[in-house]
Amino acid sequence: MYLLAIHGSPRKNGNTEILLDAFLNGVNQHFIVEKIRLSELNYQPCLECGKCEKQGTCILQDDFQLLYEKILKADFLVIATPVFFYNHTSYVQAFFERFQVFWVRKYLLKLPHPFNKQPKGILLSLGATKGAKIFEATIRSFKYVLDTIYGKYVGGLFFRNIEKKGEILNYPEYLEKAKNLGIQIATLPEEKWEL
Image 1: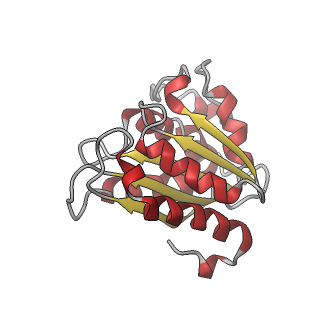
Image 2: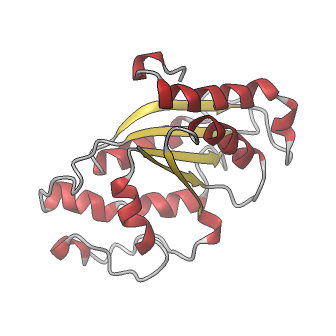
């Protein structure tokens, strides 16, 4: 099983990455895992040029070209993002926009998934405020993105009131929960995952 983990924060080694790494520590012994920091890539959002509508490929020649096959080969797609103004970061937004080519392949060109996969999506997110709907927009966006690759959103871990760099270390129970979730998805049936 191949798990592609996307780190969407501009901050390296911050709260979101600490949470993601705890999750990956639970998964690592069981899956092939690849973690990508979006802030280290040179890519741009979709230009809505329509060129992908002809052949189902994106004409933008940037680092995202390296991600297309990884995304399609993933059995799990994990997004880790802090909340910025009640949504994911701009890095994640640009990442999601590039799924337009997958939408075209599925809905316009009527192409099947090239590897016959139905990836499961997991969201890990942190927010500084206590708002009841703080994670709602990110969850909804991720669900639509997963649909373009024949995937399914299975849930996530969401923690509020965490802002300062490294503050999540004050909550070892959150990191333990993330690690346990990693172990669960690698070793237990889906109905037993604590999402």
